[in-house]
Amino acid sequence: MTATPEVAIFASGCFWGTEHIFLKHFSPTHSKGKGKGILGSRVGFTGGVADSPSYRAVCTGATEHAEAVRIEFDPAQVSYAELVEFFYRTHDPTTLNRQGADQGTQYRSAIFTTTPEQAEIARRVTEEVQAKHFTPNGTKIVTTIEAAGQWWDAEAYHQLYLFNDPNGYQCPTHRLHW
Image 1: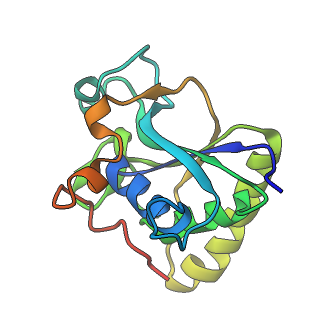
Image 2 (image 1 turned 120 degrees about the horizontal axis):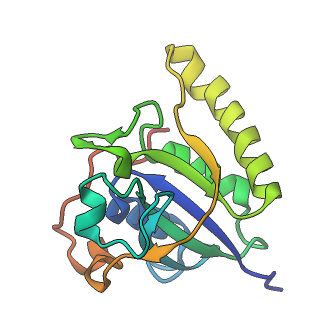
């Protein structure tokens, strides 16, 4: 039985790689049938001050928006906590406003929660991941956990970019770290 779909929003650097790695692991369509739970995704912008920003505007840093992925998922197949933990596995959450060579607030590590329950789960999972994977190495997660605000889809050519252009740019931090 399918539960009512929920939305998760994550920012972890270039949105192409963030979307790509989530879909490779959780989408039945893009994981050769091995994935479960993700029903759809969109890349876009959130967390800033500009209305209806373009990719070029976001890249200047002036909009304060983050490049992010908006994931619709079935909580009967994959929990929000699993998605948050996976988010931490797939980038470096210890670098402020940076992933690899990509620098600026648009590349920050952030979880944009859509409900108070998501905020609570995100904080709990962050504490668990910090204790297990980062405190032993002497590093600290700098990911922000924020209530989701307005969402703007990126231009069409950004959607499913790395599936449509497998040789396109992918940030080297977008991989499984554990």
